[in-house]
Image (tube, rainbow, N blue to C red; front, side, top):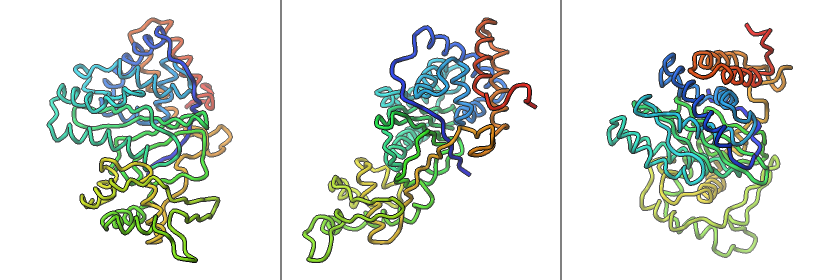
Length: 372
């Protein structure tokens, strides 16, 4: 079952100082090598895809516990620390323009691993689709600006990516775990943010399943029929689709005016077999996704989910059980693994001491004296 959680990720400007980033890379390298020796590459990837472990690791290696830079700088340090030749693990992409380099970097690292052409193509497809899903199928107002694609020499992969909302002055992090089976049907393990929005079109929710099927049916018809229904003059007493507004539960549905008709015609000629093929088609963006979803509801009566997939709460519960009890097992596991990594790391005693102090500071809801 997919889990949804949140963490506070306010926008912080600036960059990590070079002296700090250098130490973060060194400490990251020590910790991940020890984790790999204990749990294997697969075990490391499992933990990096878990937001509690990721957040704890960020704190331990020396970055802010609650900053948007938690994602970008930690992933950057990990990428710098990981040697694919040595560890059998690769990290592609990154922040801003670096995220666009992911396909080329995946190919480069895959060549080191000796992966087949088919596996390489699948990895590149997974990288592109995970970004497209979070940017287009979850219309929450957070524009992706960071994409880290992490994979091993067997072709297993996870994704940690982040979107920004300047109006809300915070960030939203999307975790894709090793357990993903589909791209369009609840593919996430976690989506983190401290802001809960009233109306978010979530085409990945299982509630949207019939709406997704209707979208495929619509696109397989001649787009001229859809266009006529939207833009032709409406008969007296009737309304066009683009002027239709429906409110329920504080939800307002408005037909977008920027539907790409060339893309719809190309999709019609392509005849997608399912919703994933529709989403993956070149040129299909948020407006097309939204427009088709609203038409599917109007014509077929199939409703999509308008619930924000983020839950506004503490990352793993609060000490008083509000909004729900602390997940002590998850916290203990992250603490113990990182503590073992630190104590075994080949670093100076002073650096170990400071890192252990940071680790303790990121589990304030469970006093060390009460740990079992």
